[in-house]
Length: 278
Image (cartoon, rainbow, N blue to C red; front, side, top):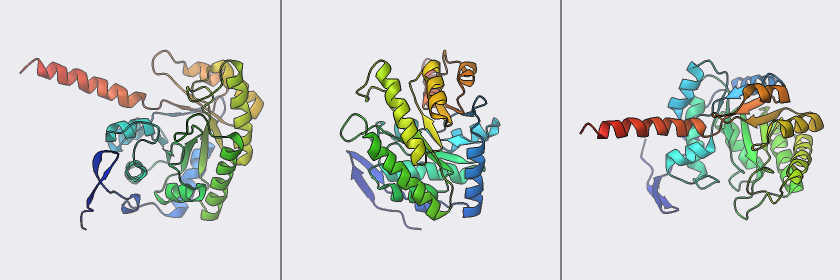
């Protein structure tokens, strides 16, 4: 196999790597993994996801007994030398995700950020082509700032669901709602009001789960009660309470890039100790 020619993008010299280069499982296996992933979203008994950023970290998660791998786009981008928020080229991000999918036997749900500017059908085809069982899509508008209009994002999710149905993979769509993030124009109680409105719209459009990062247990409880859909919550590894999230009724818990940062911290400590021995 010939080596692709290097290219330059955003000031980095990179090598084009296509997700299509990575073998994917048969469609029937992929569909079964998607159904398994969906079944593990149980309110009050959440699916816990220690997010991975490469094959090594994914295998550690599986070896620890976790039934699903979730990727962390923030961590993958950082490991590749790019900024978060779609600062990394789509093909590089998806190549890493594809390698993870091909290297573990459990379902993998891929953080697809805001969709990389792709039409919803193309994004869905890309995610299913690499063998993923699910994906995250967020409503931060990385190109223009703020949040994508609610109706526009709901329509996008609806088209993703329709595309997944056509393809024949019951892709688990986790719609991330950034009403509590700095990108949001809202503050105070308006953040919760906006989050609930978006959650209802995204659920009606075909999302399987809604993710409200930055929301505390009481706000999460309100989303669970009002929307009646599986809710994903973020868990701070320092000071966060998994029990409080269970009590709030969430069905999914993730940790984002925290494990990647912990791994770097350990690496930095070991390297600094080694440096003192020179």
